[in-house]
Image (cartoon, rainbow, N blue to C red; front, side, top):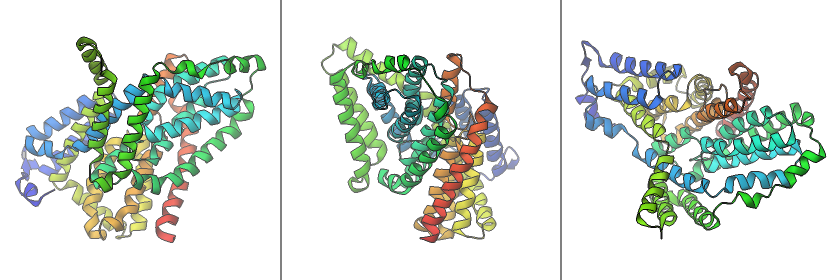
Amino acid sequence: MHAAELLNTPQIVWGLDAKIVATSIMIMAYAILFTEKLNRAVVALLGASIMIFAGILTQAQAFQGIDFNTLALLIGMMMIVGICEKTGVFQYVAIWGTKKVHANPRGILIVLAVVTAIFSAFLDNVTTVLLIVPVTFQITKKLGVPVYPFLLVEIFASNIGGTATLIGDPPNILIGSAINLSFMDFLKELTPIVILCMLIVVAIFDFFFGRRLISTLQRREKIMMMHEADSIKDFPLLVKSLTILFMVIAGFISAEYLHIANGTIAMAGGALLLLLYTMGNKHDERDHKVEQIFAMVDWTTIFFFAGLFVIVYGLEVTGVLAMLGQKFIAFTEGSISKASLLIIWVSAIVSGAIDNIPFVATMIPMIKSMEVVLGGREVVMPVWWALSLGACFGGNATLIGASANVIVAGMAARQGTPISFLGFMKWSVPITLITVAFATCYVYIQYFVM
């Protein structure tokens, strides 16, 4: 943020300090988001509009506060995943993995957890559970085993696995875009602790559920008779989709050397795959396919992000976040290690209570404001990694902690196997505490001991 913007920001709004008005708008928006009484995109856009009507931001400033790189990255990946989904490749992998363990329910629990974690790292966790959960219901029904432990471990695996990469979880997309982190930065720094935590979660579920998941040979034979190749609906499109997906990931990996933003790479990949998907079709059919793919983009999330960026920018230009950053520095006595360990636990706790996206969006400019005082970007990097780990792992704590949790709960309810809020917390709170504790140890050892 430029100093000129601070000077142009009114100090008094509606007869009150601009900081108080901006903070009140943010608190009201977050409170309504917490109740889930209104659509989150509507809440964010209204909050952004009030920031402008109040005079805290001009329209030009509001647009300047929107991180279009993040929006382009999200839209591009949603287009690519939407087309990939039509090929049936995700169902293919799930069925293939199930057959590799000879339809043993205990092995399937592990396979589906690992598949979910890997897909969540390279796609996004919401899309992953939307694709994996229906296959899970199909498999568990054929085996005659309870679906509950499978759904739980898939929720945890989606949030933990998504932590490993830049594109796996929205908090990482926000952080990566804000401070220009590459795909490889996330992969190198966070993959070790993600793998460790996945091993711990799988071991816990295998211990408590694995030995009790028993199916007859006849039922297992039904699974073995499933043909994974039948899942592939369009092989030529599969080749095109995987080619573009690998090219985009390669682009992410080499982005820091190409000096091209991740949003541009994702959007270019989405456009190219859309071209290949519609090439050779008649005019009407081509336009219908394009509109169909655009309809698969989660525009609610896109507009939610846009409104949220504006609300947070209002806090930034009024100096609220800089003030909070100064108080945070004073509280941690300027210690990077104390700041990192505090951030990871605060992030985990808050992300369990509300969606982790608004929390991370608010924390980013606050941490940025602390960097100069604490010694610069390189010195403060442990705090950024702590924010990512705390927010992503903390999303496992409650059913509303992350979008994937809400999606799975909704799908389970429609299948007649509802997941209760408290019933979920019986498993989610211990899992979150264990994984965050290990993440805390990892951050401390990785950045302050080694």
